[in-house]
Every structure is written in C-alpha cells, then in structure tokens.
Length: 386
Ligand SMILES: *Cc1c(COP(=O)(O)O)cnc(C)c1O
Image 1 (spheres, rainbow, N blue to C red):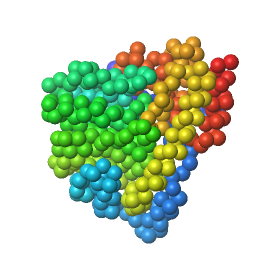
Image 2: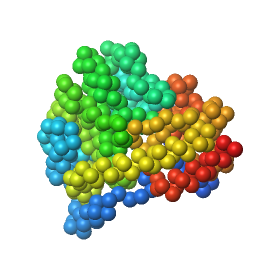
Image 3: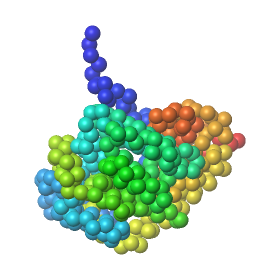
Image 4: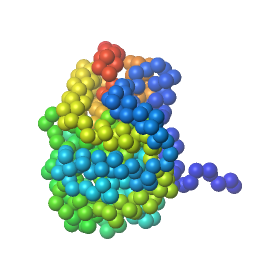
C-alpha cells in the first residue's frame, strides 16, 4: 500500500480555516472579517523607506542575524517602552514572528517534550509543536472574560514540560493578560524552571484601561524568556514578514542555528525601513491604537445589535462573538452560511481548541478594516437579528 504523502505529524494541518474562509469570501463577494490583515497600508514614510532601500541597493543577502540598524532599533524599542536592557547582539531578525516561533520550538524541543499553550491557540503554535515532534498541552481561556485559569495552568505543567508559550495580547480572543496573571505565569516558570516563549506581536495594539506587560520585565524572567514580535501588526504591513526574537544569548543562538536553515536571512530592504519606523514618536503608536479602539467599538456594537453575545477585546484585531443567542450552536456552520445570510465572513473558533466543547458556538471577527467597511458589515449583520 502506498504511504500517504504528508507526514503523520503534519496531518490535520491540511488547509487552514483562514484559507477556507478567505476563499469563501472571494467566491461570494462577502466582506472578509475572517483573516486578520488591515485593508490600509502602513505609514507612507515606512513604505517610502523600503522603496528607497531597494533603490539604494539593499537587494542582496543581509547578515544572517539581521541588519545591525534593525537589531539596534529593536533593542532601543525594548528599552524605551519597557525599560528592558537588550544587547543588539541578542536580537535575531526572522521572517516574521511565525519563523521566530517555529525556529524556537524546533531549536528547544526534543521529541516527546511537552509545550504548554493557551487555548484557543494561534494555529502556528500547534503546527510548530508538531513539526518539532513535541506534544501540546493546553490551558483554557473561557468566553467571555478569557481570564487565565491558574489551576489549569499548574495542572498542564508536568516534568516533561519544556516550553510555556504565552501570547498577550492574545489572538484569537483579544484578551490582554493582566499583570497579576503574568506574575502568576512567571512564578510558575521560575518554580518549575521552564523556558518561556512569549509572542507579543500585538504589543502596541492595546486599548484604554489595559497595559501590555512583557513577561521578560518580570523578576527572574529575562534569563528564561524568548520574546517575539514583528512589524506586521504594529505598522500594518503584514505582508512584509519582518519579525524578531530576543532573549538570553544561549537561547537566541539556538534559535539562530535553526533559523539559518529555514530562510537563512530575512528580506533585506524591509529591515532598514522597519528600523526607522520603530523610532517613531510615542504619539504615532498611541494614535494607531486609539483609532483601532474606535473601530473595535463600532464592530462590537454592530455584533451586539445583530444579536450576538460578544467579549470586549482589550487588544489585537479581534473580537469573539457567541452565535448561540442567534440559534447557532455550531460556529462553523454559521461561518459557512454567513456570506449567504449576511454577506460577511468570519472564522469559527473551534479549530483553535483541543476541547471542542470550549469554542463550539464561538466565531472571530476582525476589526482592522476601514470604518466604512465595518459600518457596512454592521448593517449587513443586522439582517441576522430580523
Ligand atoms: C499575525 C500573528 C503572527 C505572525 O506574525 P508575522 O510577523 O506575520 O509572521 C504571530 N503571532 C500571532 C499571535 C499573530 O496574530
């Protein structure tokens, strides 16, 4: 008998739900609030800087760890916003945060090691863990508050736990872990001597009343934490795939060892452009977050008017809505029918869970779209209630 083409460890990762739902949006002409990418460009000066870098000849392989200006800019950014002391030599530039996460998991995990993630989880963590031959253990965040269940976290950690993956602000729930929650995570990591991989790509997309606390700023954490971020979400250039990771020298060196055989280097002309963008004034960062917060409010109001129960996300691009009050116990079914019912596309939350009961009637909408698009979507969704 012929062996299946795809390796066993990657089975179940066939087509992502984003690809499926985006194809549905294209086929039906529905407004795509499924996949999380902005429908406007990043700052004009950032785009110009990349064009200028191409014209100036930044078109050959840059240094493997990243161009020095970007590594310095990441270190300066960590100091300026969080008071973190980072040596530019301990910054590794990657092909987006995605590569940083995958390379870290491949670098740190032996087969059979366990990796703890928050559930629902960003799908790339599950795939990275599978690629590394490691095993996933999950800690649930429950709708609508998505508070971290500390007892469940403690229970998920075993003697085989190698890495704890934390993502805050959190995709897909939009929750921002509180300082108290992060302190509890840190206490557990210290007690059990765990490595921590923290994905902070939404670090600047946090709304009033909430605060982003990098795990590496907590006592005893810098020495065990790999901090990952990216230009994609912060500067609305998700197609650029410029990410980075920093942490203790030994850990970053391990990630670099893997990274050099995945992509070798990151794209050259985007790196100096992102380096300059990181130096933008505080007001620019704050304006982006405030503007996104208004669009959050618009979509949340629209979803509630349509009859959904929703969370109120404190950060990210995403709001989670419960379709049960509308008579849909299965979020997948609602998402498949939503283009026909309301001309809108969302993604079901079920695929981001191991426990199918947890996310069954939940769906995720993104609000990183222009105001008029969100208004149009809200009007269309109002049909559901009628
Ligand atoms: C978008 C996203 C990423 C991917 O970032 P890239 O820089 O595009 O690779 C990683 N983690 C989370 C939680 C995301 O939402």
